[in-house]
Image (cartoon, rainbow, N blue to C red):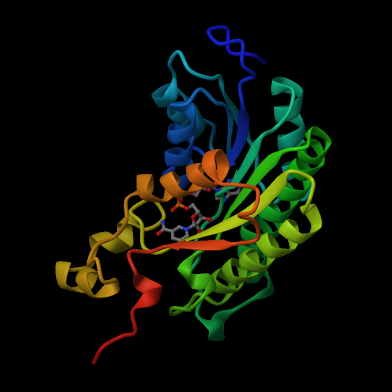
Length: 257
Ligand SMILES: NC(=O)c1ccc[n+]([C@@H]2O[C@H](COP(=O)([O-])OP(=O)(O)OC[C@H]3O[C@@H](n4cnc5c(N)ncnc54)[C@H](O)[C@@H]3O)[C@@H](O)[C@H]2O)c1
């Protein structure tokens, strides 16, 4: 598809979890630059509301209701996007939830529930996106890890393992796709105010928040989206296989007594 005002090809991206939080903030950043987007999530009303908030003269916003924990859903979502927009320039894998489960209570279903979306869903989305990207000779894959991929917190056995694995996945994608024009990187946010965290953050005191990182505050979704946008729009091909922490200095700071 081309931009009628410039005759330049319009770029397009699939953003999983694009209806809320970090995915939505990324969608807003790319939409402002005229990208065509497919926002993927489980809830049609959330996606429609997000698409309505983004609507304007810029790129087309498509929505795809899908549970990415289902094995075939990632490939179907990417194929529908490619069929609609003629290709895929970027994939942002932001879908996921954070289920607190104490290690002593861990079950196969609790483990799978986190892993199926946070890890396998992201991997299968990346694999499905990589094929048309390689055929086109360019593409940008950005996966959401977390500071939990680098250190841990209570009751986060599956979540932290998934986020650590995402760091590894970004590395292997970068190796496998090297020389094709496709890069793969991960972003590891610290505490950011989104639907995933807002209930917990609402219970914390200002003093607790001040101790979480040297900046003494939670991040804003736009601050993570700016880094994801950089990886997609501005970063050179030489930046691949990396994980960028965006955490207010949380992982730079050792706890003090
Ligand atoms: N907010 C933070 O502090 C923080 C910190 C580090 C990492 N992250 C990661 O960033 C990503 C985005 O989180 P967020 O903070 O924007 O939270 P969020 O809850 O706003 O966004 C997650 C989105 O994923 C969707 N989703 C969940 N399971 C899905 C499934 N099976 N199929 C399709 N969609 C599904 C949800 O509906 C939601 O829209 C997640 O991977 C999260 O683990 C968030």
